[in-house]
Length: 425
Ligand code: KE4
Image 1 (tube, protein in one colour):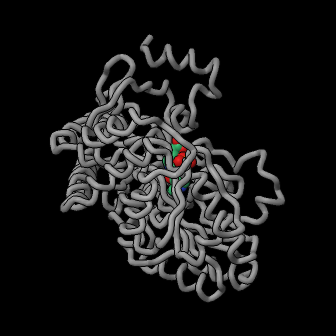
Image 2: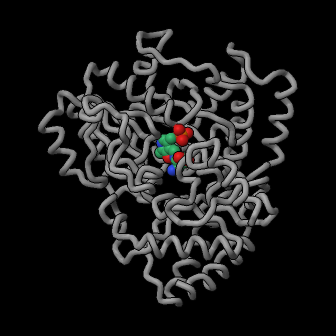
């Protein structure tokens, strides 16, 4: 029995499902999850010391690669001075100034400790700012596990095929309306019906949580126009796309400005982090400058700030996003070719260094088309790749993440593993 299997048996006795986040349990792909012992660059190593080329990257934060020397150095520099104070520090101010400089629509930002917390706070802010209660989201988008967002959610909820989640009061769920992604008509209809009750529209500007699904041309601009027409706020959930598609995220990439942006992952450099920001007139409604309450013991934690600041410094260097894009293009174009040669029907979506191979012949543009995927075939592919030393996201409904640490050799090895694995499907 592998060390990972042993650890999984042991973990299941003390942690629900043996994991601290559902998607890690490999329920969608079968077999035992890999327990990771360490990571470096583009590689992770399991508890038995086996090496894998990693395309999960901790679900996004590890964009410069694992155990980056500059990030570890930044952590070493501050950890000797203490790990948390519950008081303001200069590092938090430096982080806030870097986020404001990078993200076009953000004039003020509040740090929190997870993407879920950022979204929960942004929704409360939108409701408090507009005085309205209803929220619009899109099928398959995942915005963390806050009650109002566990409606037709993607990511782990979709992976586990959960209808939504028990424990969310119907009265609250009833205030969230989920519409088909990329469907402007459905959105216009919803606003015609109850536009004066809608506080905000929240969207993943590029979906990462049904696999990678880009916005159709004009979709994001339509959200902006319709929100302006009815006085609702537009929230871009950039927990995945932020600092990944560009230093200024999807809003820089697509040139559409939201009112509030939620962020996370990359700005923590692998440590627990979240953030939400927007125009001053909105953000100043947040306590203590305004009446809308939000707080957090570890908000702006000095270690997370230090790692996140170093991550952003590396990402601010010239050529970074061109390199990320080129590596992901090489991988996806290569995979497409290998799949064709093997006669395997697949569709590829990619935006920059975010990508997914869907096991379907249908173009994947929303939840409905994503659901045409052959998830059993994906599971077989996943296990075959894992056995050949490639660690993909353990669900068809998750995205792949390229990092600066992935080499051409990693891509060549990945394509070779795919060529072999396709033969077994
Ligand atoms: P966290 O609470 O997990 O830090 O962030 C929630 C969140 C919010 N918004 C978006 C767009 C997100 O993708 C996420 C979390 N992403 C998932 C990956 N699909 C986290 C992985 C997991 O749940 O274990």
